[in-house]
Image (cartoon, rainbow, N blue to C red; front, side, top):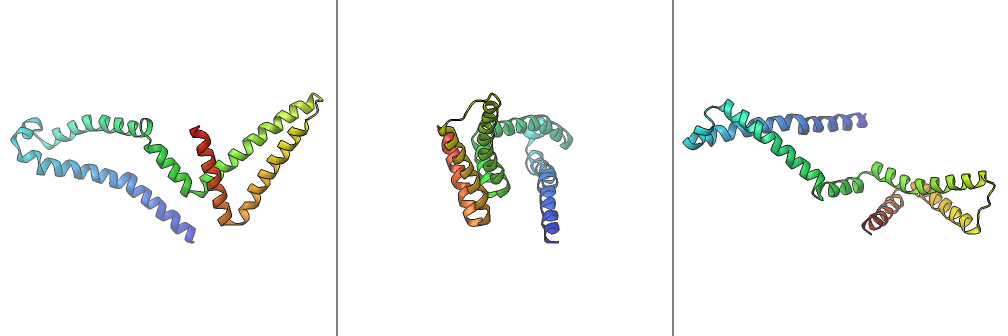
Length: 169
């Protein structure tokens, strides 16, 4: 029951903030700026003779301008990267997915390499064997750490910090 209530609360907040509050804020801004500012000054009244003119001009200018600002936010500033990093820090599901991927992909690559070599009747070296054992140990630690939530979070955050340092090099 609690899960249903939290889901409903999440959907409500999302609907409110994404749709209702957005539309309400846009209409409110248009009405307030027109009737408190533009209507009182003759210069603006010449540019925007009626409220309808004002709304149309604001839409024609505002929508492309704000779309451009959104594009800049996502593509040209470090803001979205910071948002993604915070999301990763606070969301255990995303964290788990990243860690699983970062641990499993190298193991998969190594296993496929070994399968190809073994299918050609080639032997593996002692170093390769040790590398596989090391990967198995890492994977085993990764699975065992799930038993303790505190250790689990510390392990994940340490691993993520290690990955961030690799990406910056």
